[in-house]
Amino acid sequence: MFFLLFASVLAESIVETVNNDPSSTWVAVEYPASVITRAKFLARLGTYVTKYEETSFDLDNALPENFDSREQWPGKILPVRDQASCGSCWAFSVAETMGDRLSIKGCDFGDMSPQDLVSCDTTDMGCNGGYMDHAWAWTKSHGITTEKCMPYQSGSGRVPACPAKCVNGSAIVRNKSVSYKKLNAQQMMEELYENGPISVAFTVYYDFMNYKSGVYVHKTGGIAGGHAVLCVGWGVEDNTPYWLCQNSWGPAWGEKGHFKILRGSNHCGIENQSYAPEVQC
Image (cartoon, rainbow, N blue to C red; front, side):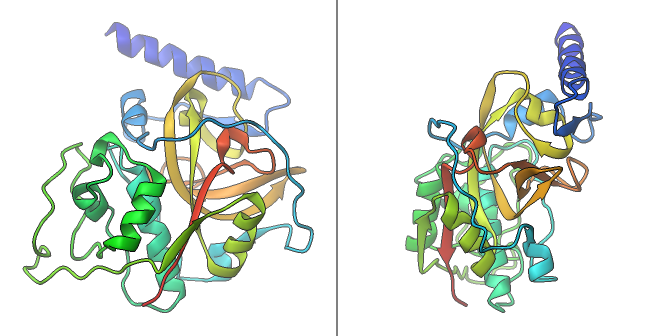
């Protein structure tokens, strides 16, 4: 009971701190337990991130001020998903990047399977977390199958053994990335513009759980962990440049499952760990 009361007070203090600050670029909210709780929040942060320093870079004026992959490739960017209570964000980020890029290429695969990485990638730790470079190397050496073949089952935190066949009994067919590369800040924009969503990881602070809308800039609370998501675009809101990202916490969190985060200063290390694969059908 004390823990629940403490968590409630903490959430309220974060919301008040953010929303009462006239300089704040975002709006915080106390979510119902059906959307997210402190325990769910912490369980979902499973990406190992590197230390970062805030630094600025010149934004490329040759590219549009605003860009959204969903508008650039209508119907090709797959819907927001929910990793639930498993530190599998690293697997969702990689699988969704692969799925979207294959869809943009015209491949009729649909969602790619984060469960394949959670259960079968022996270089990472399933619901206990993963490394972005390990996971991308795995897609190149072993590949990843479809959600239809291997549906997500680890929402409770349980990791089933890597199966020998698809759920329907057919052979598992995996699609490998041709190659992948780590991107710097300028390459992030270029890759997004030319080829579609990219995979990004960043350091998460406690106030991020309460994000509702606007451009997230860390305001209060210490480090909670590392997280990986899908970056689908960029833009400027009220003179504040941002990255547009698709989270894996369901559509009820944030801006219909998406969030904006400060762009151009490596905020939270968002420009420190980003990857893009080359894919083919």
